[in-house]
Length: 118
Image (cartoon, rainbow, N blue to C red):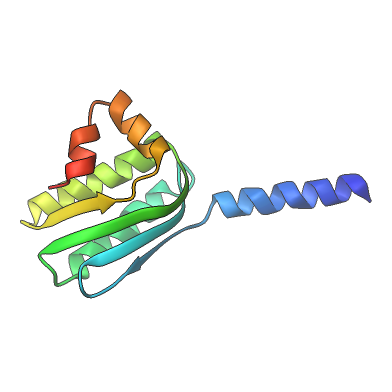
């Protein structure tokens, strides 16, 4: 019974790692939650582009405090959302970025862009 419980716990952790969601309000504020990784990046990118384009606000703010895991694919998604906002003539900025995201941005030399937004 012991190994079975361990396997179930590992499976639960893997399924949690594949969860990402965006809660977006009409006021231009959004919150991202979950993992923004290679597993979730394709879906997260598309969902973000769709939600931010439907938002009527000219200035958007994304609270990233709910990100529990991220990697370079997640950083790419955040940068892609900034590019979309700039193309559409909107402003977008991130608040409460996790230290891991900031560290990746620093290594990639996009820390200022990520923290200031467009």
